[in-house]
Image (cartoon, rainbow, N blue to C red; front, side, top):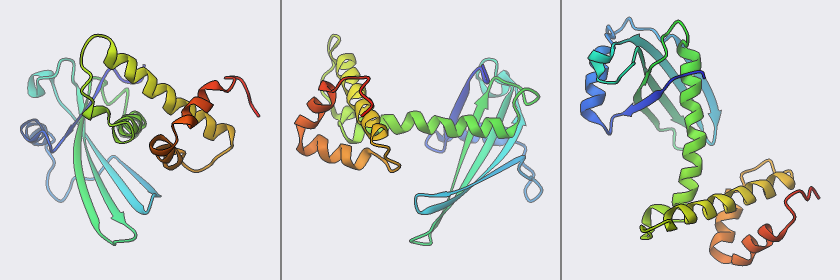
Length: 192
């Protein structure tokens, strides 16, 4: 296992964020990042600077926490020319000697893959607005949502699509319920 745990703290948790930010001991003007990642895509240019620092469980209140990092993401939106900056702090139980800034940033970025599925479930299926709360119904509906999302992704891969399957998926989910039945009725190992 690469990391025992990685906890993300954003500014929407102001007390915890400020407490951890004070621990970073960042001297203004001389604090250089240990790792910088630069990406471009989806109409934006993004720079992520990672500033790791050591901490103790007593300082932050998280058991086994020994490392944290301030990640500052600067985004240049290419169409609007707007520039946004967002800071977050990640807390880890893995010491810096075993996981430095680059793998820490990689794990943080990997979290977006999970969030993407949650976003699809909420935006396309309205999962957060669901009023189903009793018995096994919430888990059963979540399983069906995941099945349909997986089938659409598989169908896009089968057709060698290099673009996102989500726009087609959203359109079909709204307008053509037979599409889901078509996907389910295909043989699972069919590679046509």
